[in-house]
Image (cartoon, rainbow, N blue to C red; front, top):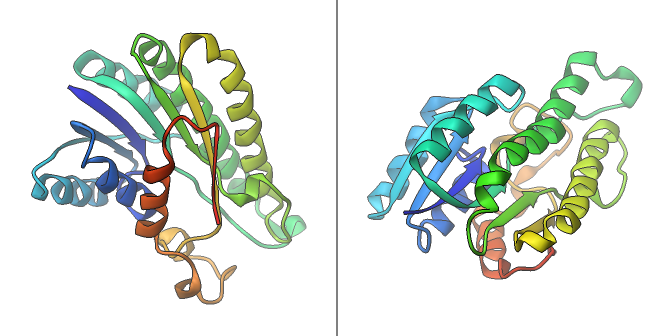
Length: 222
């Protein structure tokens, strides 16, 4: 069974990507920290007549990543990994609390790096395997009140571009996706965006990503 792993698959863009890819992928594997939204996404996929499984996985916890990947590769044949999970805390850099900085770096950077590392040997055995990293325009240019968030996304961009070169001989495609803010729960506890309703709908962005997912090294959603 052809499976795809999507991190942060319970809500927002992760949920919409799961729904988009369920039309062409046999089986969707959802990862996230909270069970309720993962269950909801699984039900939405299954209501469309498609298959889905979810695992509770905390990308800030290396043991959680290792254990989850071991379960996945023992039971499923994964051809695609979409690194979608990301968190952000915004505001003046000097006023940012240390815990928020640790969480952004641990989730956005180390979470992406480690889950990719442990799934990569499995992916390299598959024909036409793909890794898609959801990065955002915060990985293309610096922004006021986003110092650490942009730093994390620039790091993922460097990881993506370097990994592209390292796995080229193994025929694994690594794609970086860059898009602006979306109207998702990402902003629920932030005042950084005054009116999130003016942002793109995640369903629209997910559709564009799926349509452009044809082996490109870079996808930019304007």
